[in-house]
Image 1: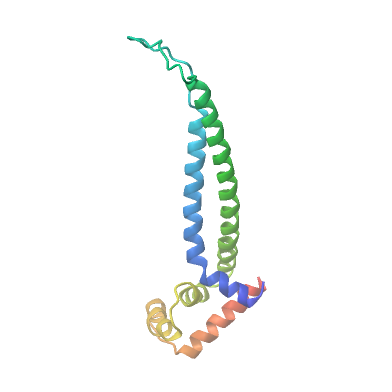
Image 2: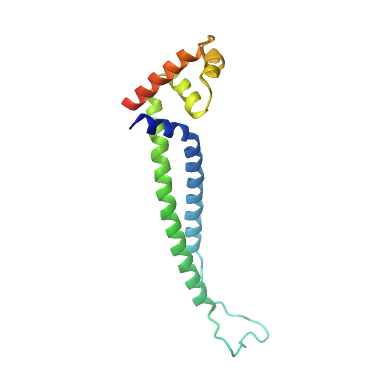
Length: 159
């Protein structure tokens, strides 16, 4: 993995993670819909009442056949949708897990500073004055923070 690819993955990490969660929910919903379609009972029911046996002379009524046909087309569409969702979920999961695995290989300080810079989009000065102070009750100048972030990035690439 090159440095540019890693930086791009880090910058799009939050977005990819959110998209992954959304797609997982869509996939779950589609699977529930498919399961519901399989459970539908399309049995013929008799109609009791006045004039229930009279049908229009211009068309043939086959409610059960229509329902079975509609269910089959819906099942096929849902199966295609589920396959596409599974592909996109796999892509997003690979991107998110690549960043997660590499972040786990860093020390706490490196991980926090790198996360703040690339993923949160904070500046070196802001990290040095605010985040570093919050974590360690000290401040650091932007050059020191830049050096730590660069070393952590290099370390992630080598993992």
